Figure 1 (tube, rainbow, N blue to C red):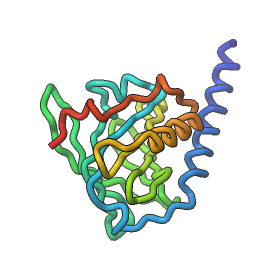
Figure 2: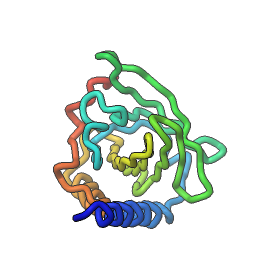
Figure 3: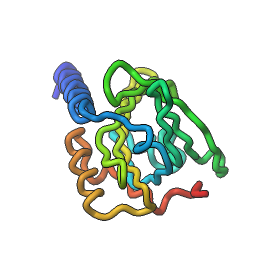
Figure 4: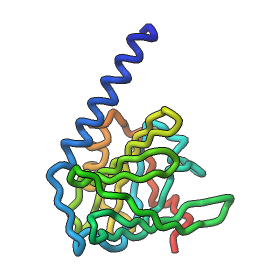
Length: 180
């Protein structure tokens, strides 16, 4: 492909990913009693693996989610900095779109709650733009430390909608060294 064709393909890919992002999350209604609480990272996927691999800037282990009164989400998470676990609290501001949030962290981010049953699992999609480069990240969290294969298969299917195959997915159940 020549450079112009490559740019068009990339633009179509970004547009179709954003459409999936909007379609999957648009019918979710958040409930404070249901979403708030402890969550454990099961799997992550990205189109830029260096950002979610060891020492990646988007490799975040959410511990607790709280739905705030204004509809924003508060995340308590941990990540590794120079071999040490660091605890951080971050608020993702609610946007005008149902289930969509924004936050400035390592660039500009749109976060969408794609799918959840509130009881066992939750899947988030994040679109990060840093220095003009877009990165997609999907994350599967569970109320327990290891979800069953059914949940992992659903996560893999959703990843495929965003052009991410199994080589783009990391099993994080044995990688969370910040577990407290």
